Image (cartoon, rainbow, N blue to C red; front, side):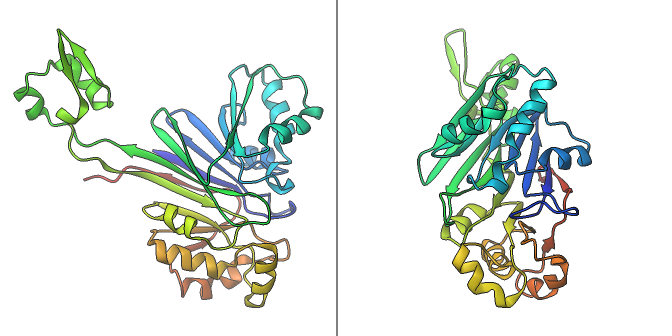
Length: 303
Protein backbone atom coordinates (compact mmCIF):
# COMPACT_ATOMS: atom_id res chain seq x y z
CA UNK A 1 0.00 0.00 0.00
CA UNK A 2 1.31 3.45 -0.99
CA UNK A 3 -0.14 6.61 0.53
CA UNK A 4 0.07 9.63 -1.75
CA UNK A 5 -0.75 13.20 -0.71
CA UNK A 6 -0.30 16.30 -2.84
CA UNK A 7 0.31 18.69 0.04
CA UNK A 8 0.32 21.87 -2.01
CA UNK A 9 -0.54 22.79 -5.59
CA UNK A 10 0.73 26.36 -5.99
CA UNK A 11 3.57 27.73 -8.04
CA UNK A 12 5.73 30.82 -7.50
CA UNK A 13 4.20 31.99 -4.22
CA UNK A 14 2.00 30.56 -1.44
CA UNK A 15 -1.52 31.92 -1.28
CA UNK A 16 -4.06 31.94 1.58
CA UNK A 17 -5.92 29.12 -0.16
CA UNK A 18 -3.01 27.29 -1.84
CA UNK A 19 0.35 26.12 -0.52
CA UNK A 20 3.38 25.65 -2.73
CA UNK A 21 3.81 22.38 -4.57
CA UNK A 22 4.98 19.45 -2.43
CA UNK A 23 4.21 15.75 -2.59
CA UNK A 24 4.39 13.20 0.25
CA UNK A 25 4.59 9.44 -0.31
CA UNK A 26 4.45 6.87 2.50
CA UNK A 27 5.29 3.20 2.05
CA UNK A 28 6.22 0.43 4.46
CA UNK A 29 7.14 2.83 7.26
CA UNK A 30 9.12 5.15 4.99
CA UNK A 31 8.13 8.74 4.16
CA UNK A 32 9.38 10.50 1.03
CA UNK A 33 8.83 14.20 0.35
CA UNK A 34 9.29 15.70 -3.11
CA UNK A 35 9.93 19.45 -2.99
CA UNK A 36 9.65 21.58 0.12
CA UNK A 37 8.45 25.08 -0.64
CA UNK A 38 7.36 27.69 1.85
CA UNK A 39 4.33 26.48 3.82
CA UNK A 40 4.99 22.75 3.39
CA UNK A 41 5.03 22.27 7.17
CA UNK A 42 1.59 23.83 7.47
CA UNK A 43 0.27 21.65 4.66
CA UNK A 44 1.59 18.60 6.52
CA UNK A 45 -0.16 19.68 9.70
CA UNK A 46 -3.39 20.25 7.84
CA UNK A 47 -3.12 16.69 6.53
CA UNK A 48 -2.50 15.42 10.05
CA UNK A 49 0.97 14.10 9.25
CA UNK A 50 4.22 14.90 11.04
CA UNK A 51 7.47 16.03 9.38
CA UNK A 52 9.62 14.06 11.84
CA UNK A 53 9.33 10.62 10.15
CA UNK A 54 10.45 11.94 6.74
CA UNK A 55 13.30 9.73 5.54
CA UNK A 56 14.03 11.21 2.10
CA UNK A 57 13.48 14.62 0.51
CA UNK A 58 13.87 14.89 -3.27
CA UNK A 59 14.15 18.25 -5.02
CA UNK A 60 13.13 18.84 -8.61
CA UNK A 61 15.23 22.03 -8.80
CA UNK A 62 16.37 24.96 -6.68
CA UNK A 63 13.90 27.72 -7.37
CA UNK A 64 12.67 29.14 -4.08
CA UNK A 65 9.11 27.89 -4.40
CA UNK A 66 10.47 24.32 -4.32
CA UNK A 67 13.07 24.48 -1.55
CA UNK A 68 12.58 27.59 0.63
CA UNK A 69 10.67 25.58 3.25
CA UNK A 70 13.66 23.34 3.98
CA UNK A 71 15.36 25.29 6.81
CA UNK A 72 12.18 25.46 8.85
CA UNK A 73 11.45 21.79 8.17
CA UNK A 74 14.93 20.85 9.42
CA UNK A 75 14.53 22.94 12.56
CA UNK A 76 11.17 21.34 13.31
CA UNK A 77 12.71 17.89 12.94
CA UNK A 78 15.54 18.93 15.25
CA UNK A 79 13.17 20.33 17.86
CA UNK A 80 11.39 16.97 17.84
CA UNK A 81 14.72 15.41 18.92
CA UNK A 82 15.13 13.46 15.73
CA UNK A 83 18.40 11.51 15.56
CA UNK A 84 17.93 9.41 12.41
CA UNK A 85 19.87 10.59 9.32
CA UNK A 86 17.96 12.45 6.61
CA UNK A 87 18.70 11.78 2.94
CA UNK A 88 18.41 14.64 0.45
CA UNK A 89 18.44 13.98 -3.32
CA UNK A 90 18.61 16.67 -5.99
CA UNK A 91 20.40 18.08 -9.04
CA UNK A 92 24.04 19.12 -8.96
CA UNK A 93 24.59 21.94 -6.51
CA UNK A 94 22.59 20.33 -3.72
CA UNK A 95 25.45 20.48 -1.20
CA UNK A 96 26.02 24.16 -1.89
CA UNK A 97 22.33 25.08 -1.71
CA UNK A 98 21.70 23.12 1.48
CA UNK A 99 24.82 24.57 3.13
CA UNK A 100 23.60 28.08 2.30
CA UNK A 101 20.12 27.45 3.67
CA UNK A 102 21.55 25.92 6.81
CA UNK A 103 23.08 29.26 7.81
CA UNK A 104 19.75 29.75 9.61
CA UNK A 105 19.56 26.10 10.75
CA UNK A 106 23.16 25.37 11.73
CA UNK A 107 22.84 22.98 14.66
CA UNK A 108 20.83 19.81 14.17
CA UNK A 109 20.85 16.57 16.21
CA UNK A 110 20.81 14.41 13.08
CA UNK A 111 23.02 13.86 10.06
CA UNK A 112 22.10 15.17 6.61
CA UNK A 113 23.30 13.14 3.65
CA UNK A 114 23.21 14.87 0.26
CA UNK A 115 23.23 12.88 -2.98
CA UNK A 116 23.55 14.88 -6.18
CA UNK A 117 22.07 13.54 -9.42
CA UNK A 118 24.86 13.36 -11.98
CA UNK A 119 23.15 11.72 -14.97
CA UNK A 120 20.21 12.50 -17.25
CA UNK A 121 18.51 9.47 -15.68
CA UNK A 122 19.45 7.97 -12.33
CA UNK A 123 17.89 5.38 -10.02
CA UNK A 124 18.10 5.13 -6.24
CA UNK A 125 17.18 1.80 -4.65
CA UNK A 126 15.85 1.40 -1.13
CA UNK A 127 14.25 -1.38 0.88
CA UNK A 128 11.27 -2.44 -1.22
CA UNK A 129 11.14 0.52 -3.62
CA UNK A 130 13.20 2.72 -5.88
CA UNK A 131 13.17 6.35 -6.97
CA UNK A 132 13.92 7.12 -10.62
CA UNK A 133 15.05 10.66 -11.46
CA UNK A 134 14.89 11.94 -15.04
CA UNK A 135 15.93 15.27 -16.50
CA UNK A 136 13.28 17.59 -17.92
CA UNK A 137 13.33 20.99 -19.67
CA UNK A 138 13.12 24.05 -17.41
CA UNK A 139 15.21 27.24 -17.41
CA UNK A 140 17.45 25.68 -14.73
CA UNK A 141 18.48 22.05 -14.28
CA UNK A 142 15.32 20.23 -13.23
CA UNK A 143 14.26 16.60 -12.70
CA UNK A 144 11.04 14.65 -12.53
CA UNK A 145 10.68 11.62 -10.26
CA UNK A 146 8.97 8.24 -10.34
CA UNK A 147 8.53 6.14 -7.24
CA UNK A 148 8.32 2.47 -8.17
CA UNK A 149 7.38 -0.40 -5.89
CA UNK A 150 8.27 -3.63 -7.63
CA UNK A 151 6.37 -6.85 -6.96
CA UNK A 152 7.89 -10.27 -7.19
CA UNK A 153 6.20 -13.16 -8.96
CA UNK A 154 3.87 -15.47 -7.11
CA UNK A 155 5.52 -18.15 -4.95
CA UNK A 156 5.12 -21.61 -6.42
CA UNK A 157 4.83 -24.05 -3.54
CA UNK A 158 4.62 -27.05 -5.85
CA UNK A 159 7.94 -26.20 -7.47
CA UNK A 160 9.55 -25.58 -4.09
CA UNK A 161 8.44 -28.99 -2.83
CA UNK A 162 9.47 -30.75 -6.05
CA UNK A 163 12.94 -29.21 -5.79
CA UNK A 164 13.22 -30.29 -2.19
CA UNK A 165 13.72 -26.76 -0.90
CA UNK A 166 13.33 -26.73 2.92
CA UNK A 167 10.28 -24.82 4.10
CA UNK A 168 12.44 -22.67 6.37
CA UNK A 169 13.94 -21.11 3.21
CA UNK A 170 10.65 -20.18 1.59
CA UNK A 171 10.08 -16.84 3.28
CA UNK A 172 13.52 -15.53 2.40
CA UNK A 173 13.19 -16.70 -1.19
CA UNK A 174 9.84 -14.91 -1.44
CA UNK A 175 11.64 -11.71 -0.36
CA UNK A 176 14.12 -12.12 -3.21
CA UNK A 177 17.01 -13.44 -1.15
CA UNK A 178 19.40 -16.18 -2.19
CA UNK A 179 19.66 -18.87 0.49
CA UNK A 180 22.52 -21.29 1.10
CA UNK A 181 21.84 -24.31 3.32
CA UNK A 182 23.72 -27.56 3.82
CA UNK A 183 25.88 -26.89 0.79
CA UNK A 184 22.93 -26.20 -1.51
CA UNK A 185 22.15 -22.76 -3.00
CA UNK A 186 18.54 -21.76 -3.60
CA UNK A 187 17.66 -18.69 -5.68
CA UNK A 188 14.32 -16.83 -5.97
CA UNK A 189 13.93 -17.66 -9.67
CA UNK A 190 13.65 -21.33 -8.70
CA UNK A 191 10.32 -20.77 -6.93
CA UNK A 192 8.91 -17.44 -8.16
CA UNK A 193 6.82 -16.83 -11.25
CA UNK A 194 7.08 -13.83 -13.57
CA UNK A 195 7.20 -10.43 -11.79
CA UNK A 196 3.76 -8.95 -11.21
CA UNK A 197 2.73 -5.34 -11.72
CA UNK A 198 3.83 -3.16 -8.84
CA UNK A 199 2.84 0.41 -7.99
CA UNK A 200 4.23 3.50 -9.69
CA UNK A 201 3.68 7.24 -9.22
CA UNK A 202 5.30 9.79 -11.54
CA UNK A 203 5.65 13.45 -10.55
CA UNK A 204 6.92 16.25 -12.76
CA UNK A 205 6.68 20.01 -12.62
CA UNK A 206 8.39 23.14 -14.00
CA UNK A 207 9.12 21.93 -17.51
CA UNK A 208 8.14 22.00 -21.13
CA UNK A 209 6.76 18.70 -22.51
CA UNK A 210 9.62 16.24 -23.06
CA UNK A 211 10.03 12.66 -24.25
CA UNK A 212 11.55 11.82 -20.87
CA UNK A 213 8.24 12.56 -19.12
CA UNK A 214 6.33 10.38 -21.55
CA UNK A 215 8.83 7.53 -21.19
CA UNK A 216 8.82 7.55 -17.40
CA UNK A 217 5.05 8.07 -17.11
CA UNK A 218 4.28 4.84 -18.96
CA UNK A 219 2.86 2.16 -16.65
CA UNK A 220 2.33 4.72 -13.87
CA UNK A 221 -0.77 4.22 -11.73
CA UNK A 222 -0.88 7.95 -11.10
CA UNK A 223 0.70 10.83 -13.01
CA UNK A 224 1.07 14.22 -11.32
CA UNK A 225 1.98 16.99 -13.77
CA UNK A 226 2.32 20.71 -13.85
CA UNK A 227 -0.63 22.55 -15.32
CA UNK A 228 0.50 26.10 -14.66
CA UNK A 229 -1.82 27.77 -17.12
CA UNK A 230 -5.38 26.97 -18.08
CA UNK A 231 -5.97 29.97 -20.29
CA UNK A 232 -5.34 28.95 -23.94
CA UNK A 233 -3.74 32.32 -24.70
CA UNK A 234 -0.96 31.66 -22.14
CA UNK A 235 0.86 29.14 -24.36
CA UNK A 236 3.48 31.71 -25.42
CA UNK A 237 4.15 32.60 -21.80
CA UNK A 238 4.47 28.91 -20.94
CA UNK A 239 7.05 28.46 -23.69
CA UNK A 240 8.97 31.58 -22.68
CA UNK A 241 9.30 30.53 -19.03
CA UNK A 242 9.48 26.80 -19.76
CA UNK A 243 6.31 25.69 -18.04
CA UNK A 244 3.38 23.58 -19.22
CA UNK A 245 -0.26 24.33 -19.86
CA UNK A 246 -3.00 22.00 -18.68
CA UNK A 247 -3.61 20.93 -22.26
CA UNK A 248 0.00 19.94 -22.84
CA UNK A 249 -0.06 17.91 -19.62
CA UNK A 250 -3.26 16.21 -20.77
CA UNK A 251 -1.66 15.17 -24.06
CA UNK A 252 1.23 13.57 -22.18
CA UNK A 253 -1.20 11.67 -19.93
CA UNK A 254 -3.19 10.53 -22.96
CA UNK A 255 -0.12 9.34 -24.84
CA UNK A 256 1.33 7.60 -21.76
CA UNK A 257 -2.01 5.82 -21.28
CA UNK A 258 -2.08 6.38 -17.52
CA UNK A 259 -5.31 5.71 -15.63
CA UNK A 260 -5.41 9.12 -13.90
CA UNK A 261 -3.61 12.47 -13.86
CA UNK A 262 -3.58 15.18 -11.21
CA UNK A 263 -2.70 18.73 -12.24
CA UNK A 264 -0.58 20.87 -9.91
CA UNK A 265 1.75 23.91 -9.74
CA UNK A 266 -0.84 26.49 -10.74
CA UNK A 267 0.07 30.08 -11.52
CA UNK A 268 -1.02 32.53 -8.77
CA UNK A 269 -3.20 34.17 -11.42
CA UNK A 270 -5.09 30.89 -11.91
CA UNK A 271 -7.63 31.33 -9.14
CA UNK A 272 -10.02 28.57 -10.21
CA UNK A 273 -8.21 25.82 -12.17
CA UNK A 274 -11.39 23.77 -12.30
CA UNK A 275 -12.92 26.31 -14.70
CA UNK A 276 -10.77 24.89 -17.50
CA UNK A 277 -11.07 21.21 -16.68
CA UNK A 278 -13.90 20.57 -19.15
CA UNK A 279 -11.75 21.40 -22.16
CA UNK A 280 -8.76 19.58 -20.66
CA UNK A 281 -10.84 16.42 -20.23
CA UNK A 282 -11.64 16.46 -23.93
CA UNK A 283 -7.98 15.51 -24.35
CA UNK A 284 -7.62 13.25 -21.31
CA UNK A 285 -10.90 12.41 -19.53
CA UNK A 286 -9.37 11.26 -16.23
CA UNK A 287 -7.80 14.61 -15.40
CA UNK A 288 -8.21 16.01 -11.89
CA UNK A 289 -7.65 19.69 -11.13
CA UNK A 290 -6.06 18.77 -7.80
CA UNK A 291 -6.43 20.89 -4.69
CA UNK A 292 -4.16 20.99 -1.66
CA UNK A 293 -4.34 17.82 0.39
CA UNK A 294 -5.66 15.56 -2.36
CA UNK A 295 -4.82 12.00 -1.32
CA UNK A 296 -5.10 8.45 -2.54
CA UNK A 297 -4.15 5.01 -1.26
CA UNK A 298 -2.70 2.85 -4.02
CA UNK A 299 -2.70 -0.93 -3.61
CA UNK A 300 -1.35 -3.86 -5.58
CA UNK A 301 -3.89 -5.12 -8.08
CA UNK A 302 -5.21 -8.58 -7.33
CA UNK A 303 -4.59 -11.23 -9.95
